[in-house]
Structures are given as C-alpha cells and as structure tokens.
Image (tube, rainbow, N blue to C red; front, side, top):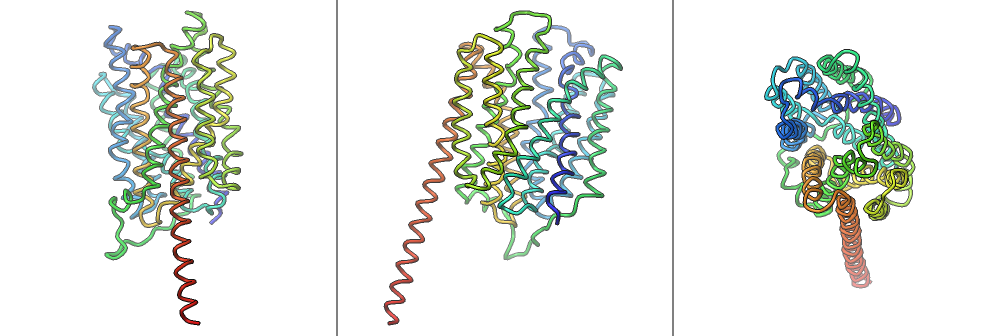
Length: 412
C-alpha cells in the first residue's frame, strides 16, 4: 500500500471538508438573526447552542463509530461520515426556524468525524517510523481549510445569500467521497473472533492510552478556549475599529499558517528521536509561548506570539496520534480512535465555555494564563507518564534478565 499517495488523497479531502464546514461560521449568527432571533441575549444563546450541538452529539457517537471501524475498516468509516455530513449540511439551506437548524447541526454530529477518522486510517497503514511525518502533513490540510473556508463562505454569502452556502458546503463534503471510494485502498481489518474479540474494557486497561485521552481533552480546551474569545480580546487592544473582523481573523490565521509550517517538520523530528520525547517538550513550549499574551497590549506583538505558538502547537496533535497508534493493539484500534475523537469533541465543547467563564469572572487576558497553565500541566503529565512507563519497562527487563541468567547458571 502506497502510504504517501494516501496522505496526498486525504490531505485534499481534509482540506475540502474543513473548508466546507467553516464556510458557515462567519454568518451563523447573522443567519439566526435573519430567521427572527433579533434580541441580543437570545441571539448569543442560540448561536452558542447551534455551534456546540455538533460537538455534543459527535462526542456521544465517536466510540460507536470506532466499533464500526474495527469491524468494517476506517475507509468505510470515512464514506459513512462523508455521506451523513454532506447530506445533512445541505439540508440546512432549507431550515425554516432556529430549532430546525439546531436539530440539523445536532444530527450532523452523529455522522461527523471525517478528519479524525482520516488520521485513524493513516495510523493503520503508515509505517510506525513515518507516522509523525504523515500525520503532521495531513494536519496541514485541515488547517489550510480552516483558514480558507471562512473567507470563501463570507464572500459567497455576500454574493448569493446565506442559504446557498449550505448547499455549497454539503456539495464540498460529498465530493470528498469520490477520491475516498475510487483512489483510497481499503485498510486491513483484524477479524473478530471469540478469543480475539475487541472491547472497550481493553481500551481503558491501557494506562498510557488513558493519559493520551486526557492530554487530547486538555489540549483542545486550551486551544479552542482562546480561539473562541480572540475577537473580544483583539477588540480590547484596538477598540471598535472598522476592520475588527479582519484583525481578529488574522490573529487566528497567523497561528494556522505557523502550524502548517511547523507540523510536518516536527512530525519528522518526532519520528527520528521519539514522539514520547518531543510531545512533553512541545506542550510546555506551547504553554510558555501562550503566557506572554496575558500582558500583550499591542496587536503586532500578539501576532508574533501567536505565530511562535503556532509553530510549536503544529507538532502536538500528530505526536499524540502517533503515540496512540503505537500504544493501541490493532484489533481495538477503531475503538481507541473513537474514544480519542470523543475526547477531542468534548474538549471543543468545554473550551469556549471555560474561556467565557474566566473572561466574565476575571479579565479577557486571563484566558491566555488558563491556556498556558493547561498546556504546561499536560506536558508535565505526559512526561511523567512516559518516565514512569520507561522505568517500569526497565524494571521488568531487569527482572527477566536476572531470571534468564539464573536459569543459565542452573543448567551449567
């Protein structure tokens, strides 16, 4: 199986899915306002509900789709996600009320997970000594889509209105099915037998996997929490300027561009010296680059720190995915990545809520301190877990060597 070809195919698919799903973000609240939700408090509440509904249902369903992947493979999982997400997103063009839109966004979550599943697919087919490189390259596709999508969505909504953009989004997602079905090879599936039956109990018996699930959850809180409040923070720096949307969008885009630059190189570095060694360092560095943003009072200084943090953050997710791949037995790999996706979706759901609470209780700048603390603590947790597992492994090997030596002396 040509894994480099699979990386290129999935890069294109992830770009299209990410661009499609983020096209609707710039005008989601405006679409609700057009439906009749004009009161400020009600508009904020509906926007938050509609935005979060997908993450909630996705977190519930991800382990179930992991079971599906263990039985039928991740390629089948990609096709399942593409069909459900594409058709339901297109249906949003015909939503007549905020409740109808909320229900459709919730249902999309039941079928979502295309990007996470694509990481799982690559983890199955890529040689372990190239997994960081492959996953780092793949990540740049979804990030590029996240940067381009809102720009295209904003332009299309200005030209044609809000509803046609949902149709375009659905079409973009459905088009990804063509390369998946015709160019992507089927990934190997371990046959399920009575003696070799996969279960979630086995997933949670692996201590290193539990640490990585927690790390995934905490990293998503740290990253999504800051991103959700970026417009308000930029407003506190520059005031109510006419190009506020552009300046705040640039703060997020700069991080994404830096991630695109850093992810492939950091993935290769992890393959060379060990992902378990690079991940704690990357997490701590990311936290340290987030901390100065607490005291930033200049928009250009903010851009510099966001760029530097983006360079480092780019290596975190590929490293986590690569380590999960190494730690998970093949027969339960679908379930493992299902729980990983659930952890990520729960982090996406929790991050904006936590950041909003911190901003309302203290100051908007404290969200960076919160993010920094989470990243550094996560780095320390992952590093401690690695050192402990390494010492246990060394102890077991020492005991085995002692036993073998004793048997050898007994024979002679």
